[in-house]
Length: 182
Length: 305
Image (cartoon, rainbow over all chains, first blue to last red; front, side, top):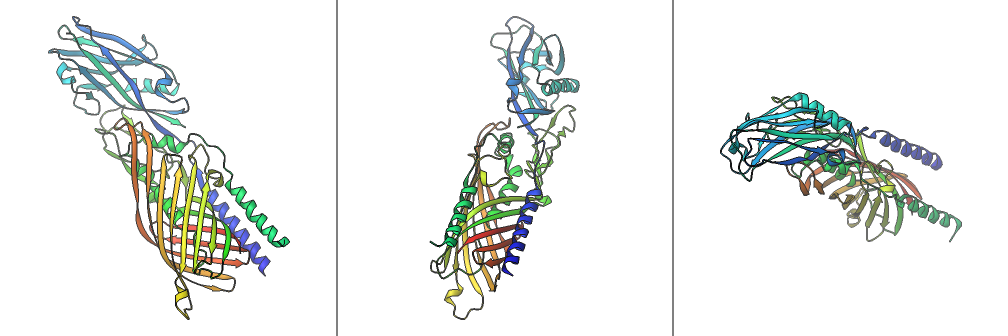
């Protein structure tokens, strides 16, 4: 009687353990939207000129995604922020942030214009106050570059309504997420 | 020492060695997910894990409502599991400041794959939360326990586990696990002559850490009533449990990057528990369940005398 009960209880315990284990699964693939915060650069404006740029920076995959992550399914563009530094009485005309795989393969990502002073406070797409315009086609290009772990070349330029003065620069920040598995 | 006693001691030592061995661990999926959230955004994603762990850790201590009068010693293996219902799988998360919509439904740690949310008026902008790490109907925990009884009608239970003892928690998913718990049960019926039922009060403290980023502590206390019928014993009672999960990590959330040190409370709740045991001398099988805001179950095997 006791031996039979022991066997029955053991079988029940093993069955319960197996049932619990079978109900427990790790999501595969487990995708994390990794924040990419390092696509940021400052572009100086040369005094006396009426245009700025074309300044370009290259962000290699190691700059924007930890090598321990495996990119999985592209990502998301979350925001683009433009901030003007220095005092200037003129306007920005045809400001442009371009993106591509090379300097000579640029697609406008964001265009912007308006009084320089308006950009002394950071202007972003998410503020949606009409100072920045996003080109969705370039977002696809950017995400393809990230998905393929290619360098991203970001170029920036524009025209000023009057000659620049000393101490002027423009900060451009791109906030994105890369879908990746740890 | 008789050959029977020697075999019993060898069995206990063998079980102890088997469950204490733990492999080395590295970076985990849980850490990778947490780092994407600021302290203000992380709660919805991780709170269900805290709730499930507290529900698990507060049970499995009670084998019987009676506490032995004479000295007893046993080693136990106990597994607990919490039922993960739909309310624990999805939550309403805030999108980044200025994003429209301002909130969206996204998975918790138990929720499965996430979907990006598109900005409602600016084509090309989108945002996405992390996938749920665990896709499970039940979230299990397991630990060995050492039980000492016969201390003036009091039983003391010490629980300890590390990563290697919990085979379903892989190192690429969860950081190093360290679990410590202590439970006490004291017989009340011993003071009441002629009491036909066993009545006891009990409590427990549990500490569970995942690496150096998750530090959960919980307490429980309750009252139990039960009775033995030959080899079988049944018990029931009320248990109150609650706790706090502390998270410490470095966030890469652009809205609030930097060090995060945040406490998430697991609100104290009252649950009804019921248990049964089959006592076969040296071996005892026991089961336990607690029903309330979260339902959790425990099953275990006890070797001892």
